[in-house]
Image 1: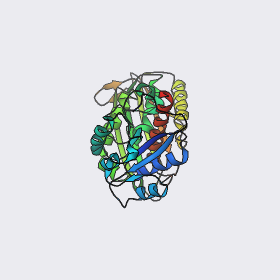
Image 2 (image 1 turned 30 degrees about the horizontal axis):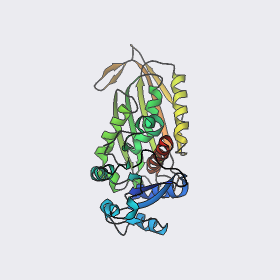
Image 3 (image 1 turned 120 degrees about the vertical axis):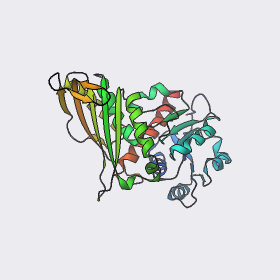
Image 4 (image 1 turned 60 degrees about the horizontal axis):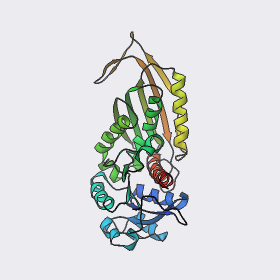
Amino acid sequence: MRDKFCLIMSKVKCAIIGSGNIGTDLMLKIINTSESLALNGVIGIDPESEGLAMAKSHNISISASGLHGFMEMEEYQDTEIFFDATSAGAHKNHNDLIVKDGKQMIDLTPAAIGPYCVPVVNLTEHLKEKNVNMVTCGGQATIPMVAAVNQVSSVKYAEIVASVSSKSAGPGTRANIDEFTQTTKLGLEKVGGADRAKAIIVLNPAEPPLLMRNTVFTLCDAVDQQLVKESIEAMVERVQSYVPGYRLKQEVQFERFGSNNPCLIPGYGEFEGLKASIFLEVEGAGHYLPTYAGNLDIMTSAAMGTAQELIKLNS
């Protein structure tokens, strides 16, 4: 791939590996909203998949025989960016094939071969990376909050609970629950800045389906809680620049711990400082699945936003 993406006279060509829920939602986002990306192909393994049929209806080239099939098509040569929306297991093989040809990989699986990337937190650190990982939907929603707290006071421990509608969790998500929790935990530490972290995912079977909800608990050194509140609110606005349905569900709640009432952190010991409880809601844009699927929307929005920023910053 060229050192710089070519923006002269045309959009940068990209392709999506995976024609399931996430891949299809990303496809419609790129088609309908992107000013710098042109979708050059959608790749799947099920000839009867709805995603491939939808791509074909938009006159987008498709491969129903996986990435190997697409690599035999002429569209492969001028495709510069690939989004992988398959599974953690399949991603390693896809990455090996793509990166050797110098192309950019944006990974929406929990494989985490490349560095974790949360656009509002650390994108500029990874401009030269050929593979960037979008962590998980829970990570994209909660890591910015932990990072916001960490900007004003060192976060000793962070714990998040991501609750998503069961209907918005496809087979890929269900098959990667262990990878989800581990990748999200590591993202909270490596990108969010927490010394220690824990992540939990809940697939909520409620009817009618509920919007994605995320609860974030942070324990940080003693600091003026107004500074924490302002940092969180500023970070919410930054996320909203590419995920409009991202919002605080209620005011941030605070609790102080001192020598008379220390908090016990597993594996850490007694803690004295400030606890922040952050309650988030993510409403999807409804490009493919209904608006309750905010967990898909935040991943596809982050992936497309990352690609567009890479194009801008590398041009």
